[in-house]
Image 1: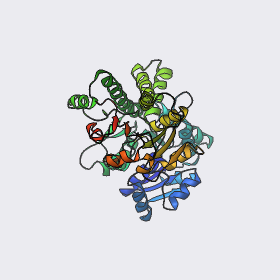
Image 2: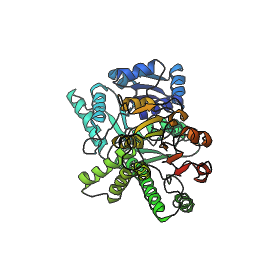
Image 3: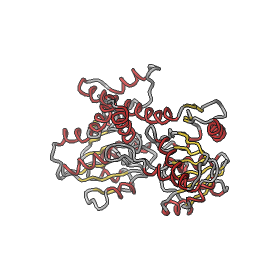
Image 4: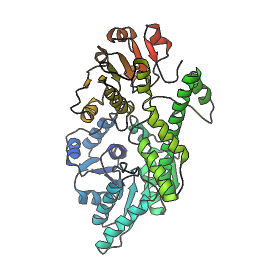
Length: 441
């Protein structure tokens, strides 16, 4: 099948590469010439395990191409995926200007039937806006046009996106027209050979499903973080509690790990967008999600509170080592990352920071450009030299089994604040290291 993907960001590039991997003829469009230049030169503008190899393999096979030419991209694909960014607006709503711009571009150039697929995370009612935008552009050309608008939300986890796309647990398609549904069935047939994973529903239900999924996962995280804080006050161990409730099949173990808050491009933005949709479009208040967001904002300062409880509010003259800058492992994404709040808090209290992350340091250098109180090291142990404590913010695998004797030797004070509960507390303590985790005894 001939497929066009508008946008070569996280969702667009993964989708385009994976669709090409199963034999489709995919053309990816981006209006940013720098991104297209990187892709044509054999690189990728984001970090995602397995993606670079897949992109290069399909480019070499002729199944995956990149362009900045809008007319070429519209002419290419019967199926036109819109996978552009929907950043949060000032009021928390999803900014749809790039989605509607992509839709208008399709309407300006299309001359045959198209299935226009909203792949970006968009609020309920966006398909109507896309349909109107395309229709307006066709009307300007004196055409009625023949097209369908479909909602096909992505459920990709950063760090595991390629595997998620290739082996999906569900494929949600919101569509009202039989022709579009059959084309989407054909497109996704290679991804569900073992059993049916396609869930067909109306467009608005599909749009809401994406927000509902992320809001539910965010709720579980904030709930466990609040329980962890309570466990500390009551002298309970949140890890024992997690095992006790996770063993209930109605609850399960997923997203029950307490920590220093969630971040990234999805959960914070989508929770806010769903709250605004409920408030302004439906006239109701989502009280649970209000609490989820408030709890997460507080949890991003849990490490700051622990550090100040140990050293006092004035951290002048103190140096802290930070392991992990990305909001989660296997990505370089620092959007809404807890590390950003922690570093800002440490600076405000007078401290300096040495930081290490396997892949996100270039992004941190961009974010903190010119900041002399922050330096980066080439390996995690070098960050420890002269530090009053180690603070773990991201659960990268390489942090899971450190040589605690060396960690103790390199630190100025043998002290760890673990924002991801990587270790059984008795292990670092057996080396004489003072250890503070989240809700652990």
